[in-house]
Image (cartoon, rainbow, N blue to C red):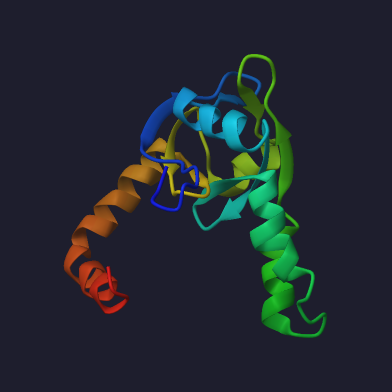
Length: 154
């Protein structure tokens, strides 16, 4: 929990998809879902990974804003086509697993081994190899990233 009393997804977990494309949600993430939301996630593509939101957060932060987008603004329509139209409702089963649709796995290049990375109100699902590359890129740009964070007051 943060200072505001809100539940957060924190940390990283390495996991494996089963042969049907199901992913077991780590206990620390599942506890946040069960205690503060529901066992339902909205999962969509974001760059080289998937991002999972509790359904309530998705509705509050994404849908409530996107529904007011202009139907003629090219960038807003592109965002809706890429991010919103890719979103899939995924329900945890009794074993704490979600089925990640094949189309989303293909678009994000998700193989069998994945990393789940907590980002407070959501978490990302990365192919393990792509995650390692992303961390290397961030490490190589560490100074520039820290300078930007200082500008925003972190």
